[in-house]
Image (cartoon, rainbow, N blue to C red):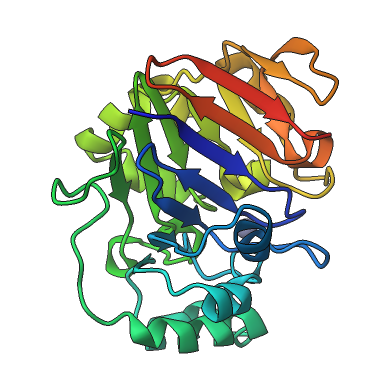
Length: 278
Ligand SMILES: [Zn+2]
């Protein structure tokens, strides 16, 4: 077995995570980008990847989709996972109209019309990584909102568990917390990606009755009035993180706005290393 690599790119107020499994499958969770940086082009031109095994679009807000045109042009992901939502429901959820990235995505997703087993299905070989995904469906929510329909992905490798919850807000978290299997996964989380860019609306205190992570990762551009970075500190136990000067510090919360891209590596013995680029 090799290493499991998890990269959170700095895409300002957006979201883009790349997971590279020990058997070298490339998984992308969300397709955010910056005006001057495309994760898809970086994967192709700098890292030399030619195939995306899996793309999960947590939900349909444009800050999770701006890189879709590059993904569509340079990769054809084998599998696309997305919220379960019909076009007429999307029209209701986006009463102000669709963003351009969403229009591009709706075109792109037409190629993906065959149902496939979920990521956690035992028919997939992820090189020793286990996955589980959960999502709320439109009709399950009292007040359907696209953020609360975010696809939530858990990944587990050699004793380490990660959660990628998209932009879930309280209603969505509480609905998923009704499922025992979801709570079981949550109780094992070590690396917590904050939902909704670390904004107050994504923070659900009930989550931390179950979840005691080591570290939280926040993907956002700048601190806004609604950022609640401090809320995550008390729940986190801390991990050693190396900065670009190779200095090791105990950290509790990492943010792309302060730390740049965040690289996590779990080796086959379960040893971790975390480094930041700023
Ligand atoms: Zn977002």
